[in-house]
Image 1 (cartoon, rainbow, N blue to C red):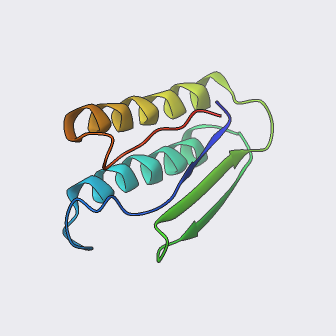
Image 2 (cartoon, helix red, strand yellow):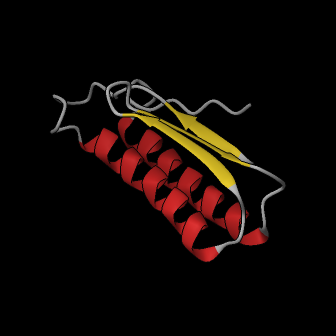
Length: 94
């Protein structure tokens, strides 16, 4: 895993009250911030709040720390998908 792309709003609740969007966003933003703070890995990140989009890509092969952080984020999102259903969160591996 060398990055992720998150897009859209879950539709679980009205914008601003959607706990699923908030949870996924918090996991993704924390992952990006943690990679920036705790690793030397270079990356690019783009966001668009209107579309609910975060696009993150590591420039090179990830360090072991970045791998762990990315997999931790994925685990959290998978648990949200299990708890609330794929109609609100869909994970696509590429």
